[in-house]
Image (cartoon, rainbow, N blue to C red; front, side, top):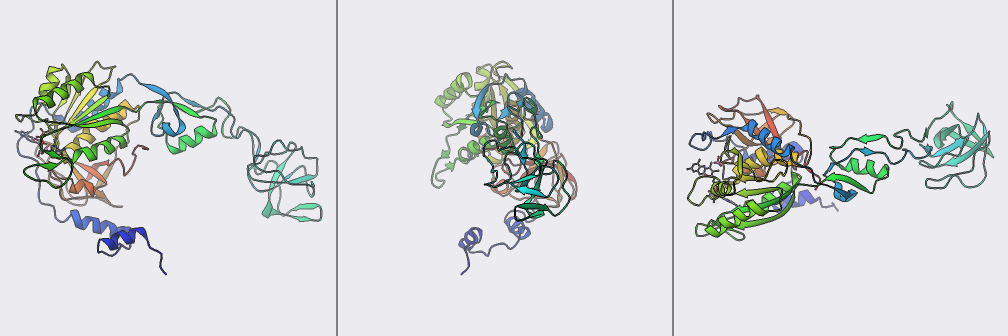
Amino acid sequence: MTPIDADADANADAGRPAPATAEQALDEALALVSRAAPATTGAPGGTGQRSVPWLRAREIAAYAGSGVRARTHRASLADALGEVLAAPLDALTDLPSFDTSAMDGWAVSGPGPWTVRPGSGVLAGSDRPAPLADGQAVRIATGARIPSDTTAVIRSEHCHEAGSQLFAERPVSTGQDIRPRGQECRSGDLLLPAGSLVTPAVLGLAAAAGYDELPTRRRPRVEILVLGDELLTEGLPHDGLIRDALSPMLGPWLTRLGAEVTGTRRLGDDPAGAEALFEAVTGSEADLIVTTGGTASGPVDHVHPVLQRAGAELLVDGVAVRPGHPMLLARLGDRADGRHLVGLPGNPLAAVSGLLTLADPLLRALAGRRRRPRYTAPVRDDVPGHPEDTRLVPVLLSDEHAVPLRYHGPAMLRGVAAADALAVVPPHGARAGQDLEILDLPWVAGGCFT
Ligand SMILES: Nc1nc2c(c(=O)[nH]1)N[C@H]1C(S)=C(S)[C@@H](COP(=O)(O)OP(=O)(O)OC[C@H]3O[C@@H](n4cnc5c(N)ncnc54)[C@H](O)[C@@H]3O)O[C@H]1N2
Ligand code: MOO
């Protein structure tokens, strides 16, 4: 009988054999989306005069978030995961908090051979054991308290008993296999500075150091407003209507970027929709409103007029990037108040571009998180460029290369759904082997713990 491998089963369901190796799995994924990509030069039309360079747009977004007054709270360890420490993490205890055996074996006092103390040994979690007399040995478990006057711990495999005597089989040095109290830290020692991301490892350290809750910055609250009359929430597209691809995608994506998503609402292109947008812009409790659609200059594109009416300050109004060039960032209150709006274009891959270009650096700064180190990878194939603008192109990452994927048009999600990252292609394109900056998708690396 052969056990059923869940992955193989899933592939069998699809009528295909399971890939034998990771390399083969990569090839299969590539086969779906990376055959000789047709040359793409971005959407027609030049970048508007207001567009800022792509890198500058990211810097503006990060700066906008950095001046905001932090909202802090005390979170249980479980809730603190993925947040940022609002205060330094100081040890509340010595670690270890008592002298501890590092091994299962024998605690001995003085030179051997030793007389075995009758009775049961010392176990982890047991209270203070009786002191050892000179020449005595007692059985001890890893993590147990060291009896006072112990000079060493001998591992069980390095000694033997004969009658009531214990004999070492190799030289014994004073203090061996004893973890002294305070070896890792003393009570009050700084373990981590304020601003550290609370990772699973930090939760473990905080628990060991005596914490039940942690002072952290709250996650930025994000409200999502999806604009458009043409959007269906279920079933197949029909009669000129299409499925809303952004509502299912943006909430989880923004959560992965460290946000607390307070809700997703759909607004129509009619005056009532514009009014609801105005009310959100002026009255939402969220730190960040993310809109989709309506950023261009079509007859029912409300975002600019509403921002103008609300007296919002446009920090970014168009970015020299394809797809996504109509994306925008506005400040809704004063700088310290920190309410912002990111307007994502309606085309789904353009919206992804706006998430990575504006929402990611803004949210990172609002959450108090450090910038991710930037990195490059050599691209496997030539990648056509836009004459003036940066391009963001979905790629799969192999051990050697970033492999550009097909189906990277502004209205397509097929490429990015198969991708690990987006590669940043400079104006005029890149040659095979050229190093390109890589923007990891948040679930691939460095994502938030949510
Ligand atoms: N005269 C110009 N027209 C357009 C320009 C331009 O520079 N001059 N830019 C084009 C580019 S590039 C983009 S991107 C779009 C941006 O448009 P909007 O942000 O105003 O978005 P919409 O017009 O509402 O929608 C664009 C497109 O995306 C579809 N869409 C919208 N929301 C969703 C959704 N939730 N799920 C799936 N698809 C969605 C919508 O049906 C449209 O097809 O403007 C160009 N026009
Ligand atoms: O460049 Mo638009 O932003 O085509 O999708």
